[in-house]
Image (cartoon, rainbow, N blue to C red):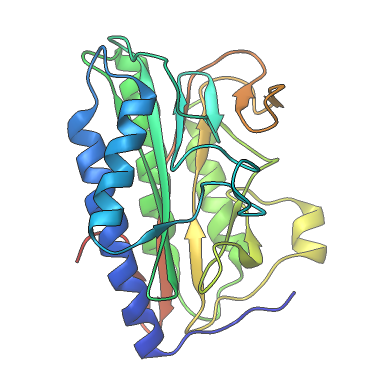
Length: 260
């Protein structure tokens, strides 16, 4: 594991990238309505972040060779789609749950964030799912401080999700972030004996993490579709995905993708 710590000036540059992500996701949130297609939302995102001088991190990932890799500018996942949904002709319907995940690079530094939105008049159950995912991310933000093992934060996140009868996705986790979208360490939203023995890490000042709870209303089990990207819940339960880029500071952490 090779963790790269960031200086104060580098964190400030990552905050500038985070503002672009925030503005992009706000535009996407405003656009969500019954009848709009996920491709139309993806185009809104692309036009927003490129107008602000940023380049997307998702299109053609991981090779960045045109025509290869992920085909969208954003990941847009609907209902049972947990993460990595491919934007396309699917029209959103009243009551759907849709997550939009956006990553960009600005002046060499990355920002990554995700939101989940209820379309039209979502059910109380789906509103609760979104709320619990957001609370879980906020719990991590409030808990992070230098010297704490990540497992202590992840344990709180997992307990909060499971206390509401939901599940934490285990096959996909958060990550370090900086000049590259994916850096060490891997940042799970749950803990286990194996993680604590072999992969746990202590939070340090200057560490920047993309923390992203992925919460399923039913079983934690997921399946990757034949497109090689879209991850769905195995039992077809709806899912919520939220994410912020966070910098560990002497007093706790700073949210770099909150628009401030």
